[in-house]
Image: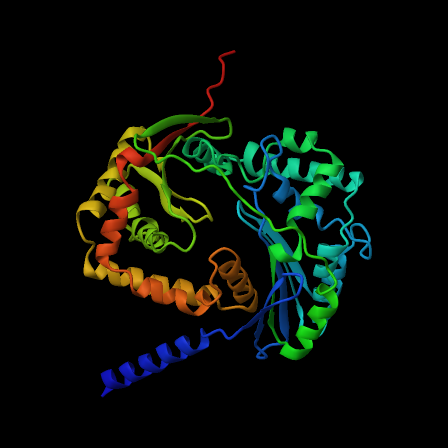
Length: 440
């Protein structure tokens, strides 16, 4: 009887979780091309207003890198109707919080307010799109901010150049070869007019998606969106034709020296498919299998059993044109990087040659479900998912259907994808080393 009750309770819980994750939304386009997605959830008096622009680190000319990340900062400087330096003060004084972030493929701005300040959030984002103040003073100020960020996160941070080191060796033609934050000499050399031209090209309604999620009334919200965003003029259509990379057919082995570290790091990278490709979802599951938690294969083998690594991890960096699959490890004691790489390859070989166990596969499915639930557990998370799914995956409905992709992945798929992408002749190996200091 107790077991039956437990089963019944479990079924009810699963049913409730499944129901709670069904996200209803309305989407449409304004006449100027701005795509709008609305999600109504009146369970709490909170609303998130967000705009995702289809512009990122890859959108640049040679010699002018880092513009998208620079604009992430610059567009908080102020507008014709928001005084310089007052953006964050306005948000916090109305009980809100906000932030922005930039990847190689998109830039995302958002504010979360008590729902009675919905109109304020819409006004501020429309101001950012329509009336930004782009002057030399602001450019100079943010140039110093970006330089300090680069120093803090990359130049003076231990292991801060892992990604740039891999990008430089994995890509030879595509803009992904350069760091998202760009090179400081490029920003120093850019003219004010170049910054204005960049804004005019990419920060236009027809190159963006607006998401409003939370405690809203759909009709009232549509009216406000029309009032604030409808008058903004469309820009020219953004076209992209970036160089295609040749397949990696022979192992690339390179070294990178970091003056901020004492322990070297072994890094292995593989070029992988783009956003939305089913194989990319499979690679996400492979990452979980290899390095998510202390029971994962690489952690258990290298850290617990063999005691040859201090830390190990694997992750699939999904991007719009090409992805990157990275595995890294910090060796323990006198263990060589070659020894670490050999043991990692041994586990990858097993993936290519054998099906993972049924019990391990069940764990992967459970973790995928948990990750899906967590990603949409807040209004801000739902807003982000809706924007990303529309802009980068070209399918807004993934917010409800993405879990089905994971549920339909099989053990055979994992083996097939490992054979397709994770081969020794397709990898880039970086010996990430302490910078040798000259003897005094």
